[in-house]
Length: 259
Image 1 (tube, rainbow, N blue to C red):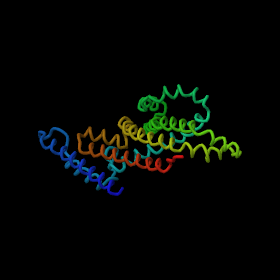
Image 2: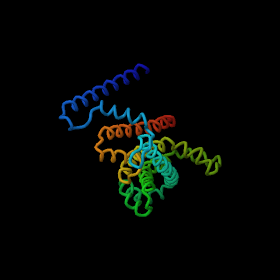
Image 3: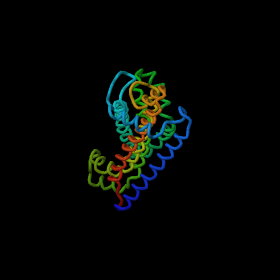
Image 4: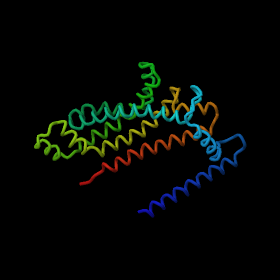
């Protein structure tokens, strides 16, 4: 097992080195002043930005650390709120097949709508761009968790619920000791999908609302033609996304079980 992990790590480093080499070679062959900057230029910019990540020189000049914290703060509020609503609604729908069939057509209509399509309505009704961005996160996080929770609860073996009824467990205890533990793998799978959707949506939303956030940072640096900063921010966005997914992936493996 340890040898397999070491081999995978070596292959990953080799692939990364080849890709970086190809990138640098393509950039070196391009006419000066044209084309994308190479990995060496991006690395220089990254080192400079990481040396002072939390500086604040005004509205359009903040460090990458502050930009990421602003985005993660919006993500946390919208994602956690949506997760609570989705889990509660999913449990209710999963325990009631008739209600689920009645509500499902509306869910299917709302689920494919891009979260950004709600932005104009949020801005018009709330008139606060930061809150509108949080609501975009809420909409992007809601449906995967709701659908997975409803499915997980609906597919719980009836034997578990029958035993709970025989033991005369109260509904709160039945929910906490039977329903949620049995549906936990499906719920966490939905949460894992939702966190990826939410992180994608917040970057796009921040490009529209401006202010502070990694999405606005990317757009502002593009307007300044600072392409090395844009590329570094893109890599940072990807790395944060990987870490968020890895955290929920680890939780999913802990909750996985087989009979």
